[in-house]
Length: 183
Image 1 (cartoon, rainbow, N blue to C red):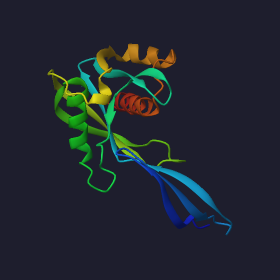
Image 2 (cartoon, helix red, strand yellow):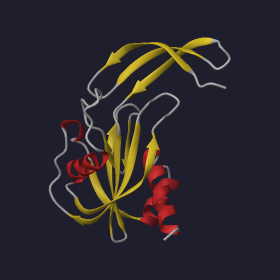
Image 3 (tube, rainbow, N blue to C red):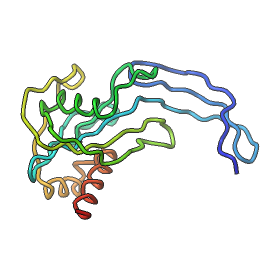
């Protein structure tokens, strides 16, 4: 069977961080329909590790109305029109902005798809080591953010207790755990 074919597309909404579009489609069986898609720029997620500690940030997430612990992550505002920074450069920038940390060593952990049933957004997860501390450079929207170091056992407990529910952070933690198991 052929994949879904896009017949037409129209932009419904746009801001600096996303575009919502509605596509007219043809399914593999020939029937037609519509598909709503949220386009967002590539994101970078950073698991900063210093010895047996991992840095996380906590902030209020307006769409769900709750504060959540997550690994450092973000996109470059205004990069929807193809002028995106390289994922590694974005990762370095996000780590510095959100925590003030700098890293000497960077390793790609893997590729993550945010919500492939409704969004085109994809991202890269990185492990940052060789950490030095500095002052954060948070954006205006991040003024309520704070960050702390946690051990692996603390992170596992926070996941079990429902304090970490961000899907990208959970996926990155799985990649870290698999990396540790495989040496």
